[in-house]
Amino acid sequence: QSALTQPPAASGSPGQSVTISCTGSSSDVGGYNLVSWYQHHPGKAPKLIIFEVTKRPSGVPDRFSGSKSGNTASLTVSGLQADDEADYYCCSCTGSHNHVVFGGGTRLTVL
Amino acid sequence: EGQLVESGGGLVQPGGSLRLSCVDSGLTFRNYWMSWVRQAPGKGLEWVANIKEDGSQKYYVDSVTGRFTISRDNTKNSLYLQMNSLRAEDTAVYYCARYQLAFDYWGQGTLVTVSS
Image 1 (cartoon, rainbow over the protein chains, first blue to last red):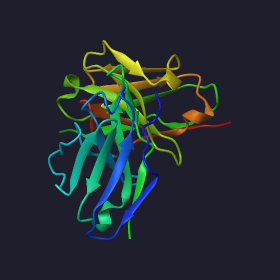
Image 2 (spheres, rainbow over the protein chains, first blue to last red):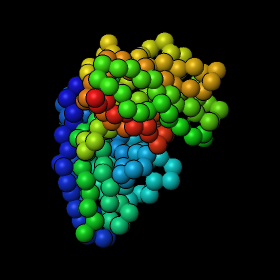
Image 3 (cartoon, rainbow over the protein chains, first blue to last red):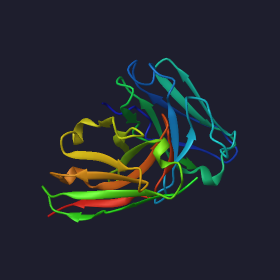
Image 4 (cartoon, rainbow over the protein chains, first blue to last red):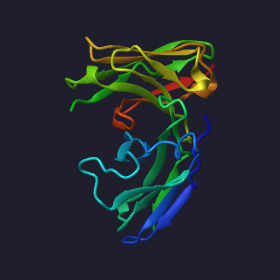
């Protein structure tokens, strides 16, 4: 159950777009369309922003979008805003389908 | 939708035990898989365990298998995590979360510190 690989940090200026990658294997990211993404402001509960690779829960702005190619999933945040500064985690079901693995997290800084 | 509230965290010595609880104030607790997820200080999120709606299936991350037990009481809208043989590396904030192939509702977390 190895963690998915994310870059530790990403940054962008207000209004710009930034993309965060999440690399796994054919046993997790590549094997299931069950990648989800979470926004986590320190001290608060994590928040689901993308599920099933591309879907957004109600209330999540369309500035957040997800995609997947092979064993790598991506989260794109467009029109960066100050409040987007947070830690972002990807997540996937794994080989047994009922096990779950997270990425190591990416700290997004809005310059 | 309801609110998830964890309790039971605290300071415990290595080798000790602790039982975490999570109460769902909503009305649909019995209809969903539930999970525990933790975050060690300065580290990322780590999935710990899942339990099916009726408690008949349970899954654990390898590092806690044989030491932790997830359970639920649908009559009390409650989720539990019994943690035995605790180690320093179990120190973390523990979150309960609703699981529908993604974690769509989370509690605020409860801190567990394993230290002598």
